[in-house]
Image (cartoon, rainbow, N blue to C red; front, side, top):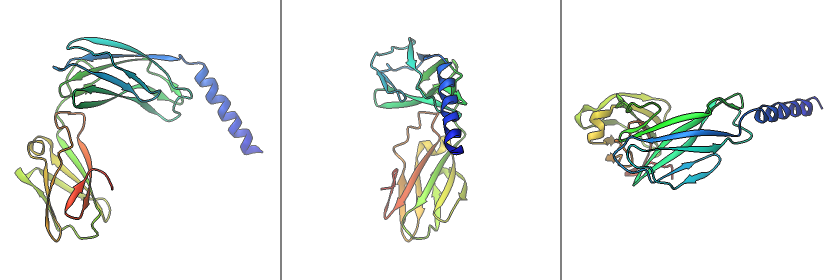
Length: 213
């Protein structure tokens, strides 16, 4: 019975914290890029805004705050669509089940998202998390232009590879040597989006994959 009472008290506290906060938040999207924004999708609650945002234009979105709000310390997600590119941004930071950020500004530049009117900087490093699914030993991993600065063995089959972002983005290929040589081209990463500096790859027989299938 004590456990049920504790759960009841927790639910009451959660509901009371949600009840005392505003029901909406404002998100200002500023297009500082050279391309039209086609649409915006908010993940929670799911909303799609198909109004286009032209160059140097601003659109303010009023989004409902989800109830109950996530209890952990975290932001909410939205995605900005621009021709064939997709940018991920955050809004509505929460803390202890309460939305503490009711007004957010998101600036989209050609090189990615920023939360102030300054373009994002180019990352120094790019990280590849390589999972070996072949059951064979990896003898060596290298790249053109000496882009690799470190290879860390996290577990028997998982390695974290640190590369120079600028060098690797020019030729995103890893040469992986098992009982044969595999040229692993990482062509699904948008290196023009400087918010993204990592990827996960799975080594299969004679190939790599971005998903574990």
